[in-house]
Length: 321
Image (cartoon, rainbow, N blue to C red):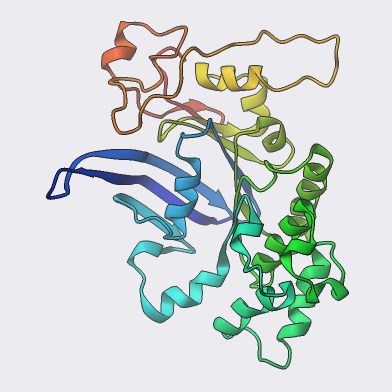
């Protein structure tokens, strides 16, 4: 078994809500409320759930774009949130984040060749004489041509801009890439191309991914293991095949029931969840999902289930599973 590259233990990320003339904290938005996961070398871990479940905040907390409230984030054996100065700077290139909309993360006045090369210069990974060549190599690895390096971001389509975002991360020779909804804004045909690009780069470079998405049909084609989040907590984790074949948590079952089936004659019972995801600043007592769960019992209202082993590398947080 390959070594653990990223280890997250009981991660919590809360955002204070202040009110009054003195700006006192009256309550907190519990965006991430105690999740744990491990990603091994060469593995793709998919993190799924509805909008507002805390998936993106997990990614931002890992790379320190959001300050964690509690828990540990260990990358390559070191606690990222305890590192400072030169050691943190050395590890930064090995952990890269790809955003949902790369256009908003690109300077519209900077040509993409320079945008890709700038991080190489900042981290001392290339000299001024060879930074151009490395930027072109990254572009070509992601399916773009060298002559396009002198163009500005607005001259590219959505799919091409996503390739630029991948190339910018790839140029730093990372070990782990956090992809935050990288294909949700793209057409279906372009989504397939980007997913195939992720898979090819993983095979060629031995990359690991944390792939964040709300689309289970996309996650099914790319991920080795999957974690299902709801309101800041992990509901279920397990190998992709097992989770899709026999989901254990009612929330996972509801999400899977919405995935289209490619064979028209086959039918799947659609589970429609009532209501909206609760306010993360005032989550329900007991099981957070009980307010929308069609199978909830009295115990679910008062007793919060722990994420426990269900055998076969699977975990579930449900009293009924």
